[in-house]
Length: 267
Image (cartoon, rainbow, N blue to C red; front, top):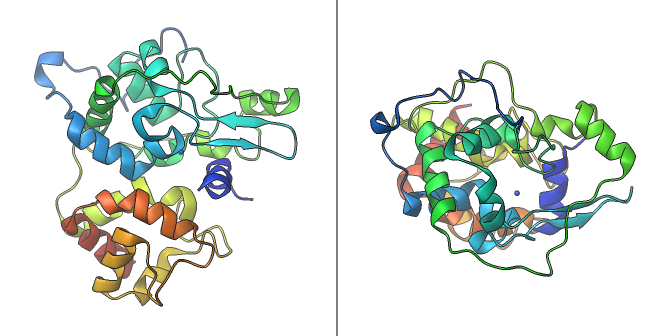
């Protein structure tokens, strides 16, 4: 069964009060940690989908869907929600799905975001702190049916896998520089929520295995990442990959695109 974030993406185009110490987000003296870069954070946030689900500028509502069961899932206004999180709490949210009040971050692809490097998390945090506050008075709230809320809280909902991190994941301090390692990092932090946690797809035209990348020449792959044009020309079969690539992946550098292509070809 496809997970919730994929359902959300395809439909629209994404703590405990005192969290325990966690090795995935080590406590390091502030003076020894370089500050995040809000400009780079904006680029990373675009690539991983933050300002897709939460809309440009973080105003919320880029993701706003209703399920057949009666649930409504709405990405909130980040310029309001950020006040609930210090930097460590934001890292715990991105890495482990731990929200400030213990609710389940429905629709957040934690299983993908957990692989972000420490530097990328700091950069996203700096971007989030820097974006101007914006009012969005018409923004709806997420509402879940009682059954769905109970299942998400227990981690038994069929789509809960999206919001649950894997045990033992140790993210890197910075994105890798070796091309194949960088390509793998980009694939797992950019592509896996739609193309499967092992990149072998969820089936169907919307989420094929990324073995399809091997059919692209380097030039055609760059064009896909920049404009959304597929190898045969025009848009993807459903139009969704084209839309996502043009909006999110067009911010990738030439070196990142080449590294991603090299990794996908080498699998």
